Image (cartoon, rainbow over the protein chains, first blue to last red):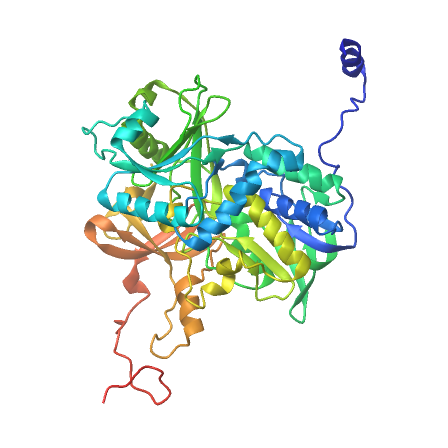
Amino acid sequence: MPLRLLKYGLSKTHPAERHFARTPELKPNYDIVIIGGGGHGLACAYYLAKYHGITNVAVLEKGYVGGGNTGRNTAIIRSNYLTPEGVRFYDESMRLYQNLSAELDFNIMYSERGHFTLAHTDSAIRTARWRAEVNKHLGVDSEVVYREDLRRMIPLLNLSEDVRYPVMGALYHPPGAIARHDAVAWGYGGRASQLGVEIHQGTEVLGIKQESGRVTGVITNRGEIGCGKAMQAVAGMSSVMAAKAGFKLPISSTTLQACVSAPLKPFLNDIVVSGSLHVYISQSSRGELVMGGSAEGYSRYNTRTTLDLTEGLMAHMLELFPFLGEVPLLRHWAGIVDMTPDFSPIMGETPIENYYIDSGWGTWGFKATPVCGKRMAETLATGRVPDILEPFRLSRFNEFALVGEKGAASVGH
Amino acid sequence: MKILTCPLNGPRNISEFVYGGEVVDMPDPNRCSTDEWADYVFLENNTAGVVREWWYHAPTAYWFIAERDTVSEEVIRTYDAGTVFKERVEFSKPEPSADSDAPKKD
């Protein structure tokens, strides 16, 4: 072993195995073109190749793999939503996540922690109770807990009544988890690449070619390619891409910010969220506290961070964990999120016959990566939208049949 | 701290303002189709670039229009809504029509 290591160190070529194939030349034609090389696009490519035998697939990524919201979220995975449609969908995702390291033979560092959504008002307790009942009915582990339970379960949480918003109770979701978000993109991308899918980094889509209501190809900065079907999975840029294809979306793009503290010894096992205070916190396996707030209140295509957010966030955070006042912040970043009016995603068909969409992921997209990839792959392969995606169709807005998840998704992510 | 210039109150902290969405024409709710109404209510241009949008200064309950670049976040100008909307918009009751689906009163 030391000899091999020495040989490797002295060699000029460093013949380590690449995780992804190098970006190849574009072929003139692909069966399926996926626009966006984040977790969702790569997951879809993986499931297409693995379970539907479709490998003539190109994933086009403007920047680098997983460099958008896949690498900017706070990596929380949970399924304690409010509507039956939402709970069913996110629960399937959670089951896929639980087995994902084995499925991909790649450690995504899935870590089950327990998830608390704190309630500071009577109405928040009522929503928690409502969610718990919907969750339990659909087989999801979820329960309302009160102050005496919290004192035992999160010993360091400030339960004092001498704060602006005293904690009254919480919705407790034991399977709530975190994972390494980059690893999810790398795992899906690496395996898809091994199965023959082409991942084109640094390839921006400039236009969508159409003939008589069908997409025939895409124009990129590296030339034109033809395709049988296409799907866009571009998060914050969804409306911009849809405009290239010629339709509008019920999406408003804005910014979501998050930050991490300097690493501390492990003291916080659970994920703690407060919808009323607009904060959430968890401790990563590196010991950093991962914290975030709510999305900006106005339309924005800009990833600059603001001091207002950090100040507002920390003021509330110090109510929950006062001793954090001494802990320095390490990094602070922002991502462009695609918010929908009902806080539910938009997946499936578009006004264009062979052009599919995976968007509207706002602040809740990471946890849905496996299920969305799997089900969108099914949609692309069979041309039929599976029942589990049907409630999230784009046409629901014209039918005024929204899937209202604001109570469960707006800050909880 | 971000500053927005209110046409009524001058430069103020952004936290005093509420975003009101893009300035778009409202179709006549009594005459337009359901699809047109859904488009008006839900669909967004969501432009990456210069947009014209409603803002509200909450402490003085004052609505105005801002032209802003959503990419660079530069505010180009802000002005009173009266410079664009010169006539009062009336929200009249639906006119009874022969092809209306609404139940009629006798």
